[in-house]
Amino acid sequence: MTGGPGPGGMLPTERLPFEPIAGRAAPPLPDGKRVAAWVIVNIEEWDPLRPMPRTVLTPPAGGAPMPDVPNWAWHEYGNRVGFWRLLDIFDDLGVKPALAINGGAIRAYAPIAEAARQRGWEFIGHGYTQRSMQAVPDEAEDIRLTTEAIAAFTGARPRGWLGPGLTETWETPERLVSAGYDYVCDWVLDDQPLWLSTRNGRMAGVPYTQECNDVAMMLIQHHRAAEWRDRALDQFEQLRGDAARHGAPRVLALVVHPYIMGAPHRARYVREALERIGATGDAVWMTGASILDWWRG
Image (tube, rainbow, N blue to C red; front, side, top):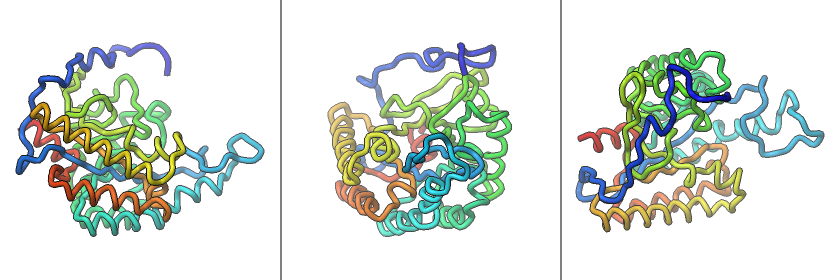
């Protein structure tokens, strides 16, 4: 997509005036906690008839082979095996993540959706399939289908949205407001929630993360598996120090994809990070919706 926003959209600087975090107030967290921490698990449906959204192996002859069995299977392992490995960790530690799920994945991976529903996880809209919102034929329809799939399965409309790959069009916030969403996670530029202006009214942005995200660390920056644990702990220590110094809580987001952190050689580092963060007594595990409710209240 080229050019600036049309009549229905706005520039980022129009949506979000600059406001430094220094001196900004925030409501207290329960029991005097300093950090609202949330884990986001991304569940995606990869269409085998399209080029894979990401690859672990470069095709030996280049190009985009069809079918791309090794890269499709690499992702499929995460849903068949890796998710259940991570689920044991969350169950053991009493952590309820948010599930950012493609609308189509609710049907394709029904046991995953059911496991999350039984445990009371929050469901967040994540596009209907794992495809850039700038490439879907009709963004409003994609949002509608995703919303209806989650509502039909959980009995409640989703309140939060995370674009596949954090992608948006110029009009995405307007369309999300029209579809009834309360918050979006794509605007990764603060340690506290914020308000975004849209032509249909304002909506909240809840802090997500690109830095404490396994896609960035493992697939793009090619770190060793322990980097996820180390970076999560370093991020948490800085945020709780900031909160103590300035008297206003901060938000810690930690992102996992089952095909990445659910791999056997990586999963232990998720457990170690969450154990150590929880043991400090300075973090409260929340979801995007509960973070928004805390901030507004």
